[in-house]
Amino acid sequence: MSKIQEVADLVERGKAKLVGKAVQEALDEGCDAAEILNVGMIGAMAVVGEKFKNNEIFVPEMLVAARAMKKGVEVLKPHLASGSTGALGKLIIATVAGDLHDIGKNLVAMMIESAGFEVIDLGVDVPAEKIIECYRENPDTKVIALSALLTTTMPSLRDTVAALNASDFRGNIKIMVGGAPITQAFADEIGADGYSTDAASAATLAKQLVSAE
Image 1 (cartoon, rainbow, N blue to C red):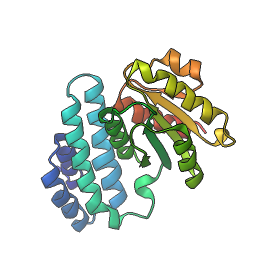
Image 2 (image 1 turned 120 degrees about the vertical axis):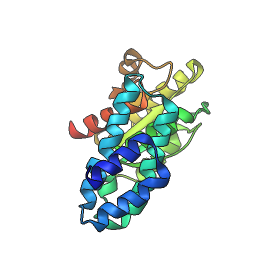
Image 3 (image 1 turned 30 degrees about the vertical axis):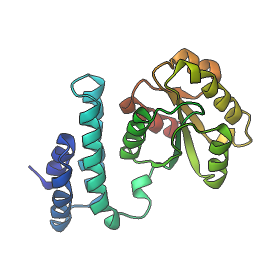
């Protein structure tokens, strides 16, 4: 097994304590840092995402794998060309005003980060104004991801998307939405660009939205 395969295997199995050492060994053997990131880590997280979609693993295993990847990235960061860990661009993520759920959002943020985005996480109960303000501070943001996990906060999601749709920068961003009560039909109705059912699909969707430009 090559060192990069070993890194991938450890990330998949969520062995956070061992990943850093394996990454260092791969670097010492002359493996390319970008390849370790793309094949060893992002590749492994794609496998984890597939397994999650097929119900072969569940949220805890996915979180553990994402955490292991984070540990590997910490060792790798100094060796990567600046910006390659966020090579796909910036993505702002938030749970909408009135909604305090963050586990799903955190998982989505981790998966999207694993896919190669630089993620700006605004947290929970975030008003539309704050999201717009954050965009103004980061005008190179490509995607805004919004989550609502209660039927009672669906109107808040609608209002937030409406505020973004009315903004002068709407042409520069893609809006994706998700959360337990949200459906593709609702996403279409409120004018979002994309909807995903779970964290693994969200990472795939974010990549598609960016490459569709």
